[in-house]
Image 1 (cartoon, rainbow, N blue to C red):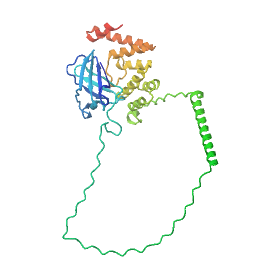
Image 2 (image 1 turned 135 degrees about the vertical axis):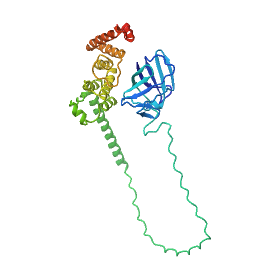
Image 3 (image 1 turned 180 degrees about the horizontal axis):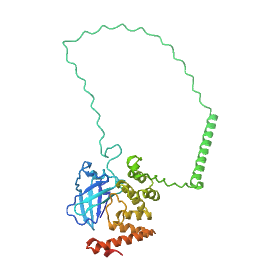
Image 4 (image 1 turned 90 degrees about the vertical axis):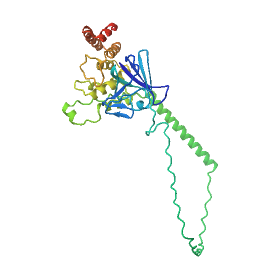
Length: 345
């Protein structure tokens, strides 16, 4: 089972569709969304306790369950975070977030936010009437007039002669032509003659002992580094180089989720080795930590097949081990394993 949250083009910003493959028919679906830190999404944001959500609308069609959700869900999601979706009956599955359009803009206000109204001007209190009018003060004597010195005469403005104006115009024209020639020469060098610089791969962070890694802060977390990489150009070979050191036997759950985000992005962009490593996350035979990604034999087989088709020879051995595992489960009476063997070529 696999779920994907994308933007709903029919309803506009702040609305999305959750498509769940393999969930089966559900007459009245409700769902729970978990973040990688274990918190659950509610109508008021992320919280520690589990909260059940209901879709705005839903349908079961062609074996796919579609759930329509609004800003209370969409505005809280981030395509660089890892999530899990829980349905009553089918259980947990990864939730992939793609191409959302949020309803709010910069500054924390929504598109329809109203401008604050100006405060009303304070009302000046009226003086209470006194016992009677006060006598008018006696007028003070008018000041004597003071003589001011006459203002200096301004010199007449000297206008440039016609010949000097022509010289200045020619000088400006020549300067403009020279500037255009310099810009054209610079553009020609940049796009034609210059050899493109190869962007070096980022250095692999040095390995530290387990005690030092636990007791000494080492800068940003692995998940933060993965999100920063995916916000940029996210070249597949760079993502692969960052993810491979995290595929170790003592990797934490956060390191496993960070490696999965990097590898899945590289695999979707056609990197064969990344396809093989993504398949290991879903493979029950693989002994490497898988973070918050649940076991899914169908997904493991799919990624192994894609890696093999792209020329990754190690995918053949991984497929053989996975098929042997499924055959052993089918011999023990596993109905799902028997169904998988019937479609296995």
